[in-house]
Image (tube, rainbow, N blue to C red; front, side, top):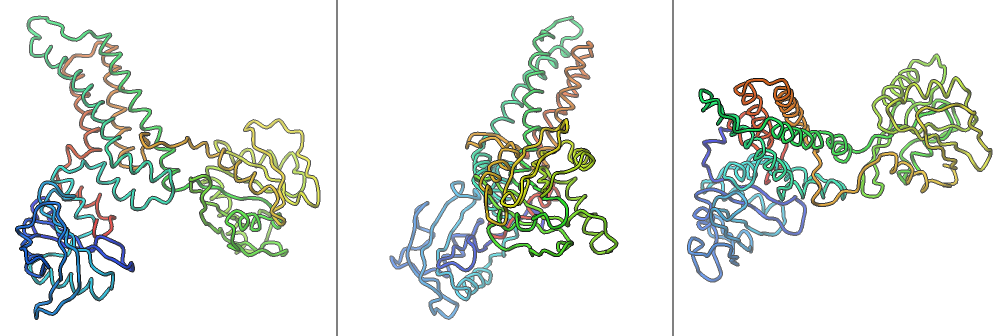
Amino acid sequence: MSDILNDHHTICAMATASGGAMGVIRVSGDNAIAIVDKTFVPASKQSLQDAKAQSVLYGYIQAEDRTVIDEVLVSVFRAPHSYTGEDTVEISCHGSAYIIKEVLERLIRLGCRQALPGEFTQRAFLNGKMDLSQAEAVADLISSTNKATHQLALGQLRGHFSDELRALRDKLLKITSLIELELDFSDQDVTFANREELQQLAQHIKEKITRLAQSFQTGRALKSGVSVAIVGKTNVGKSTLLNRLLKEERAIVSEIHGTTRDVIEDTMQIRGVTFRFIDTAGIRETNDKIESLGIERTYRKLSEAAIVIWMIDASPTFSEIQEMEARVKGKKLIVVANKMDEKEVVLADYPWTIQPAFLAVSAKYNRNIDLLEATIYHAADIPEIHENDVIVTNARHYEALLHAQESIGRVIEGIVTGLSGDLLSEDLRQCIHQLSEITGGTITTSDVLNSIFKDFCIGK
């Protein structure tokens, strides 16, 4: 990627997904209006350069030989009142791949450069239209797959997370200014900051930062999907259950033991939350090398899952219960007794320490599957998400919050132990710097920005 901090090229790209009836081509930069004006023939005969800001003109895009490429609508946005903060033109044309290709090639021949992934949003950030956390929310909004992730991305784009960080930064600056003011008058033995009040304020800041950092576990689950491993012996109905949950024949079902030899993963939504279901190889003693590899993967997926469905079709022994309990410590366990149409499974009178949920189902006849879905949803313990909620979903933000948490923790410890003001001031500045990294206040290098925007789609 070019040096985006010093790149003033006018760029163009398709801003909508290909394959639709209509397509929008976005052009942004100092020469955006002048370049489009060379190929656009308005029906009103008005020059595009004379058009008012936020106006829409009807006309035609012409090729070099003045033949018509397409009948279009052209929207004009003048800096700074555009998405990128630059002069911007958006050409709404028909969605034909040929038409879009011809229009883009015409713009490039007239002086545009093909936009790189995320470059429009990069420019919006660099021109102060949004901070870095809001820019990252654009990608999250586009990739949102359920109501919860959509709400979180929309709230972040609207600046709710930024507002929280700004409030924290203001409080930190207040402490820093008081301590540094004392340093300026250190020879006069003047005290501007009551240490007890400073400690309370710093503690309040730490609690806020800790709450944001702890929300990452929920945010990661919402963004990536809550992982649910279905485990159990061979032929207890795991694959049938997966098919029932997904409402499609995703896994092969057979009465032959050891049919599933590898993990099968797929996702579904329950009440607006994405769950990643993992059907695993049946657990049993076997000399088959391939099946043994599948069982090894079963244990690995079990350790990675947030929720474990232990499927049984007979009363488990004490030792089986003990082994399962040891393997799922720290996770939510749902014990599902299958084949309720054939038999009643009795759970041993064992003193469980992890309090699993117990449920009887018939995967074959689709009985109690809706109740199992509700049990899985409640086991995920996902709070109801509202538009104004601030939940961290980005690993970069989480890492910065952890560093900020450490810094403010050292400030509190320093206040309690009577540490000198210059050392307290250094930790406070570190905390401010770490919070500022989230919104981009201290990011100036192209390498960092390139790494953040490289996964954006072209045209955004």
